[in-house]
Length: 127
Image 1 (cartoon, rainbow, N blue to C red):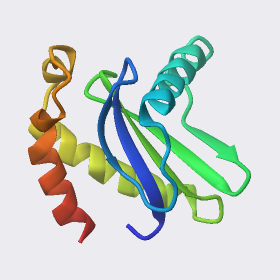
Image 2 (image 1 turned 90 degrees about the horizontal axis):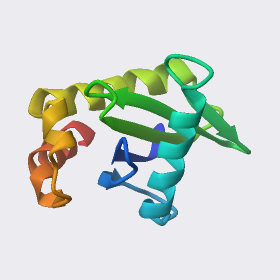
Image 3 (image 1 turned 90 degrees about the vertical axis):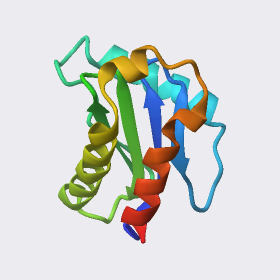
Image 4 (image 1 turned 120 degrees about the vertical axis):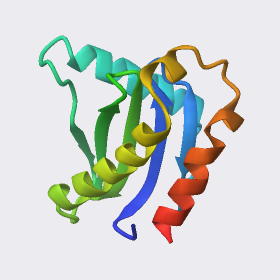
C-alpha cells in the first residue's frame, strides 16, 4: 500500500463514504462532487468513463464499484506503474463488494458509521 498516497470512496453522487489520506488533506465534499461530475461527464464519451487522470506528478485512478453506485479514487505518484495501482484498487473494491450491495449505497442515509466494517477490513488489508 505504500504505492498509494491516498484513497477515497464516494457514492455516485459524490458523498464521502471512506477515506485514507496521507500527506495532504482535501475537502472531501468538494472533491467528491468533482469526481462525480467528471465521471458522469466522461461517460457521455465512453461507456466506462474516466479511468485515470494525471496532474503534475500525481495520478488519480477511478474505479466504479457496485454497479456504478460508488466510486473509488486512488492517488499515487505518476512514477508508479498504473497496472500495479489498478491491482491494489481492485483489491479494495473486492473488500467493499464483499460487505455491501448496490442497494446499500442507494438507500444509504449518510451515516458513515454504516461503513465501519469496511474500514476495519481495510485497516487489516493495509497492515
